[in-house]
Image (tube, rainbow, N blue to C red; front, side, top):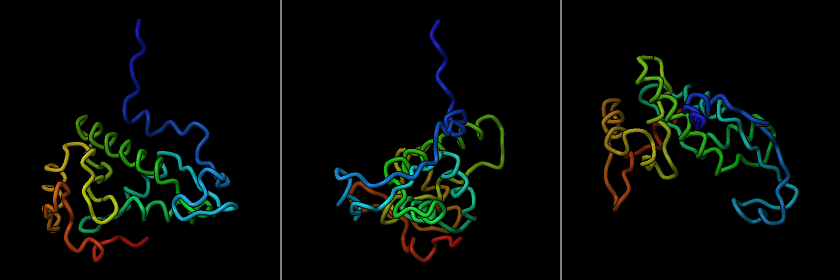
Length: 160
């Protein structure tokens, strides 16, 4: 019998051996503005979710902002761009799963944007759902090429 795949909520709580701070390798050096001797924190999924949960209505956050907070928390040079983005997606999917189960107090994933104020097309409901949720909170969303961007998102960034 095939094993049932993990739910998004289970993935969110599966921290494995994370968080972990590692030295930047020669292969990584130069990437993300780093050098040998620098460190990178690979966060636990739940840490990313906890930060996303703190963004109040009308405010926004970004993956890069979350990475800065994680680096500060773990005394690392940077937060890992790859895992932080993946874990934000897991947090978003887990929130949608919880909402579908009738839970009300879910992580407001639509408030976490990609660099440059871009809506994350991979979040639940895609661009249309997030656009509606953001506009409901007073933000203006415009299309630029294939991307959808929150106008003046910098003025709405949450400070923690």
